[in-house]
Image (tube, rainbow, N blue to C red; front, top):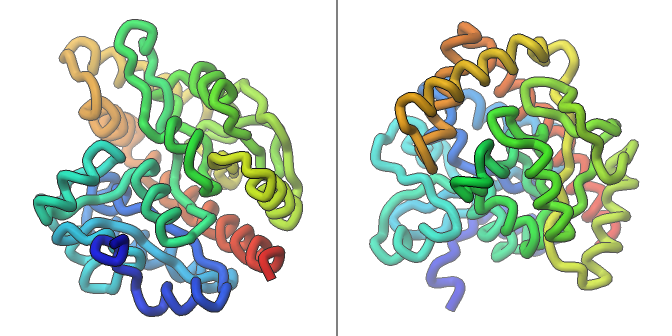
Length: 306
């Protein structure tokens, strides 16, 4: 029955069948996160980085109602250019599929589809989280609940400071989701390497991390792991500059009454404008860095499965 919905690219299928390491990639960053043609250039470079580090990339999206695992160049181009691709999280999947629509996958929906395909590692930019003011709005990303239930390791640069990082980490702890620092004790805040919050555990290598993941899933401790991988120092933004930009953007969003799923793209757009585009450059570089770590982790995990 699953084959009716899930369409795995032949190269990815062969890799999964043979136990070759595979890394899942989301598509929201292509359709909704960056302008064309930077989004396509970024997507192609990310896939190349994963190959260079010994794994097979599997960019995930929904096209004409089909859950696609691994996209070709034509499909990537379509995602990068089209204005009709919906942002697809868990709640949206049945409707986008049944109506045969196109959807770009978020962290949550990418995790779901990756797990259906048997992919254990997913590299992205940053995870969603608890929004500031959630005590009143209850605005909490579906990414966090997915991490609580779905057996996929998510390599990311932490979460953006537009979120309430402290509450995000508390929420993950409540749901038993380990937050691991890759060669860091401090949880990164996307554009910057510091947030003022510590991770649960620090790991110094992909091999060490792979052993922990295998132990977790062998013990039937269902759920994902947040692998927080800081942006390289040469590409990080000044801590005070980025936080000042975020505060200004949050104030404007509040004045304009922007809420819910519209808030994140608005805030990121404002931060990009305030920082004269430097935030976009940092965003691209941290994604590249996460792809590299994700590939190395997938390679180490595949060794343990043999």
